[in-house]
Length: 274
Length: 364
Image 1 (cartoon, chains in turn yellow, blue):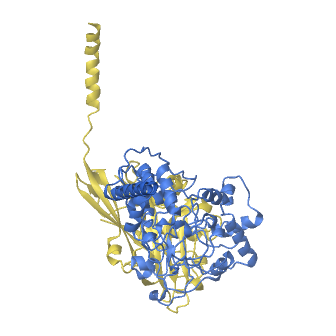
Image 2: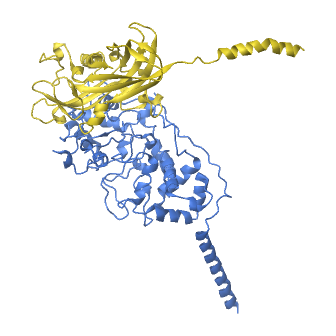
């Protein structure tokens, strides 16, 4: 009899708790972000020659970067963020024989994004300090952060972005590594991580089972914009490649301004299109 | 009479033996009565090393490694039973052969130097100097049939393994086969790959220093700082870009400026480009690990540099022009003392414990 009473008492509790556990059916859709690169408006491809200044041509051989903390915001200063991706490695080093791939770019797809209207996209260029404290040994094969090609042990930092190539400094039409014409920008360390909130022309509307396509276009030439006369002897608003063709100085070295500037330029060089 | 009896007895024995032999060819030897209890032996990943792929289709077992070790060292692999993998990969030379270009059974020189097998478990960007195969298991299949290496055929080798007095039991214990007919080239390659994945070197003087057990000499320290650009006072050797910790390679394919080529098609050995077909990969080769580099002379894919001094001189010079040369190659402005210090650091990458332990486990 006592058992029956206990059962009768507990039964409503069980029913109530099982009701609580009923999953709320969430309305979700998909978001695809496509990354592409251009050079002053022209499709960017490695091994292609571009005008840097009226007298100097450049040719790139590698362009890639880590992006992180990508999220959607419902309004400009919203503290509520809908995360799309914690981190990814965007490699845009497609060469001139890979024009189709260059035009297609690199996609980050996120499924099950809560349906709704979002006003902005937040993105980190590089890695925030908490991720940058880790190292490739912390990650399994296939994880973007498992790569040792983008880790700089001496600085205990990932290389957030690699931009390599050549500038034809002497104008002889030949890109010569041995003549110090190599460009070696390996940008990293906590100080150069930047986050930016990008606003589309129209709100980003995620609908049930629908897919929103966002496009982020990086203008590579704009990455080298600089206003400091020390690094822009020609005063053309561009980094002087003849004297500053590499990065990865210590943070307390004057040359670190180059790292900070180029990495910081990703914010302004990236345009969000829908 | 006694003589006739002896001859008759011998005849019976010969016929019986002959019958048995014929029978063993016709009916696969039943191995199912032999115990099959493989003991898993996960690869011990040294601290700081990259994690291994989560999905491993060829799990390491004590028995698989034992079979792989035996095969690796057994001249049965070659057509004339004179050479094995170990003929070009010696433990005391950090799994290389000390030759610029290796020779196979027909005394023909290969096109490239024998690569070190140290830490191959952690390679994830393809094997051989041009990265033409994706996994160690695939890699282990190729030298057997290469006409300038072991010049054998897998069909012939598998036949020998099936009728060998010892191998069927090894294969049974490693892979649980029920009959010799199940022995195939993929099992053999998987076993060799399992053995090769045990060739882990992570106890050099450099590692001991990193673990706080030892300290650099002043020259070694200076060399470290040049290597990794860790000093404002010393020039940047630019080495760490491609020979990054912990493997001392980034596993990339790059052109390090050793060959002058006016056009992409001018390289005598196309390297990576010969595999990918991309002109932009011509002249690129795998960046080798510098672990145990003092033991692996001569250097580069064609063994053109006999000493580390020659290697350092090459990099310090800024190399030669070619369309695919890496932008990382540039004149380094190292003086003779700094070059010597760089080599002092490179010598700290030698892991004698690895050499000793690997030598002790060699099977002849």
